[in-house]
Length: 635
Image 1 (cartoon, rainbow, N blue to C red):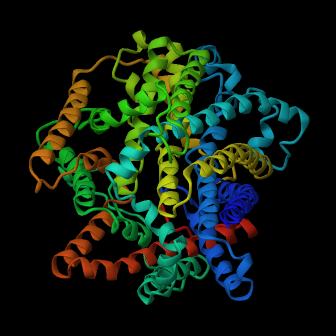
Image 2 (tube, helix red, strand yellow):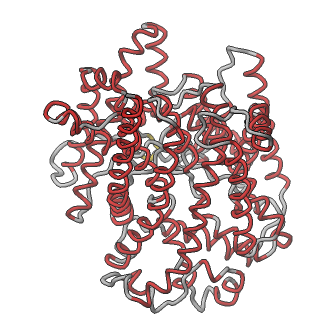
Image 3 (cartoon, helix red, strand yellow):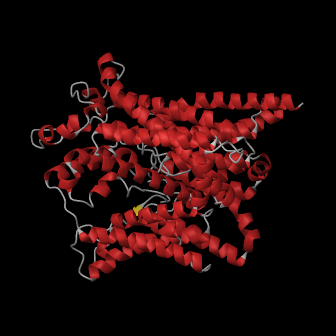
């Protein structure tokens, strides 16, 4: 009996992996087509849109199968495996990752002119093997109506993409090994909330799913969000219909000192309110409070006469210090577990790592190997030993921070403070060196915003699988397989759309990545920059402030400010108001209705997320199928 059960479970996971492998290329092309061609973004939030849509559709199919063909119905574990594979594909084939890379690679060759003198000043410092250089073969890329499968075009792209593909694959492996080393400390011992996991868990866990899909409260939230999206989507084609503004509305302050506030907008995204409702009160409060705190610094600084100081109040530099301190505190809090894991990895097997996705020995040496490859890649690209070490250490530290933030707050939007371009700005450009500046600019594409970072998605996958009692080791092959396949499918999709449509017509062509990278490089090589005490003071102030917040929280249970709020708060441009709304509603419910009322209200907010995502996905499908602009739920 047990043998048969084991065989059936093995077959079911095999079936799930096959379904996932078939869906991953479709999902990659769908996401790239929507985001690159029409800038209908589906992956700019940690809970990706398309995997939730697929899961919703599979649950519907499963409901029918259970009634008419019960033996063919997918098991909860199978749904989890398929969902995780689709999530892995969205960490690669996405606006913030592969689109950035493909947009950046031809940038210097195409935009070099006699006036900007890039050929003389910039080209000598760039690693030629990571970029494409034939301007004639790039005409189709920018104008369209050509095929990238032309042998000459394909040969131009194949070499650089192979190097970048290995680099990306190494990131996925390195992050997986690091997750194995910290998983038990953050999931089993600390028991973090993992807000991102809640909706897919409710949809897949059998007993929860029955209550979830039978809940009238959930369907009320679903219907509200869906009705708003349908109405707003139809308004795009029939302007006489009403429009309910949920996306950003910019607020411009013209009178001083309020004019010092830049980039201030209000949003009312249903999905964001629903996800923020899942976040602990102290965390959600800290997120929106520190966003307004950063704006208040600009106003107060203007009043004190700092209005003309460039970059004041140095929010980026404050964030550099904050993330460094937050990362250091995470390592300190997890030190005992990490030391145990390393001892097990280096010593004889003792069964401590039983139940982990892989043995601690494999994870430790795999992490070491991945780190060496990451470091060696940038050395080969032209970085000095110091800056290659700094880049590697900063990336690993920020990966830990982002993963922790996702596990507690559900999102880490627009985090790029520790990238090499920002770190180099703290030093003298003459000491940094031209080669380091050039390679630092080439780092920008995968550091930019970090909204689809693979490490938190992997840890969330382990959390979801563990809640279903799924053996974690069995999840690793489909995760890595989906990640590797997505690299190829993502690159292919980008080139197919760009050569067919033309970058000049693609609304989601990441021209901002090229502008930010090469304008910074041109300025750094030309005018340069110097060490500024004010920037270093901001870095120190940010780090000290995070340590102070952490100390106060450890001493006083009632202290309301969480250090991660100071880290991510200043960058919550699009989501500070949904955090505020969800915090206020949750506070009132818990204060006057208690935990029972909170549990009764929770399906409504999950329904907001699901309704927003399902209709948003349907609008994007319409746009991709008929190649037309459509309404999008975000941005």
